[in-house]
Length: 309
Image 1 (cartoon, rainbow, N blue to C red):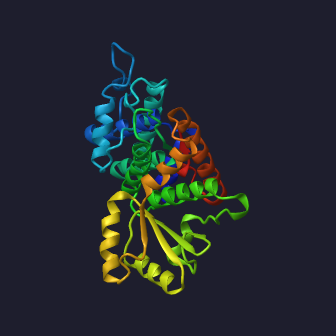
Image 2 (image 1 turned 45 degrees about the vertical axis):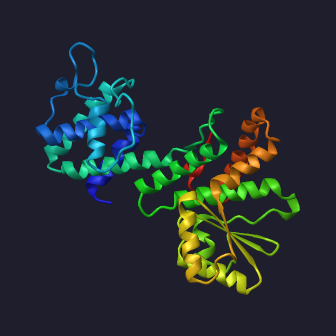
Image 3 (image 1 turned 180 degrees about the vertical axis):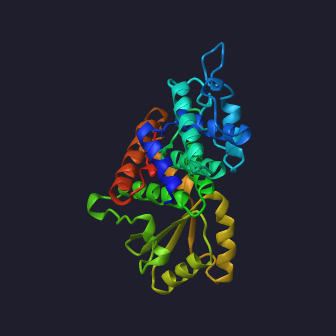
């Protein structure tokens, strides 16, 4: 960590700059310094009529985030109406002025540092399952998985989508199996493709593989399952199903593996548990997500994998 990064981290911790409104303020003031130079006159930050931070708003913040390829909305008001925004802006301007006076200033680096903090903020938020009785259960599950795919795209190198899907499937299996036959759960770092396990979940002579991005390595594992007398089942997102069947032909195992669409795999059980009574769907979804969250707390270290309803 450089001296500048240490000073930024200290300012963040002392001033508790962690919420969306506070992050919006420091992004705005940093960009203001880049545009107009330093030092900043604190009086120039205040609007005359409204007593708010001049120039701060959703459009301003989203324009800054867009420069870094971030399309998610940080704050609907861009921090403009957050309590204490003026004070936060003045304190941060004073901090930048002090760095400038010492000559220890690199504004583009500072802005990038805060952008990483914004990405951390987005990543720390739990996923949200939006229960809308007017929508199909399949689409509700699909929306949840789409959130995980979006977060994964925003944070290259992560496996949010695959991890969420694996633990949803694990939660579903726990709820349909007797307690003495519950499956073993493994963290994201122990995917079956990199271990000696026959699949993500083993049930009698069935190996269940859970993935959002199937490839040849998975099909080789399925072929090994078959040769060992184990029936492979692949649970994946709808968009990947055709790709699996195409690769299976190349491995000469077409028609010997079951490929199940994840969204339907989960939604079907919710319908069955609720006995197809619409008023019971929410309680069954709650039960599924509750078990999912228990699994995440038990074996994962990232609380952002949790799901709120």
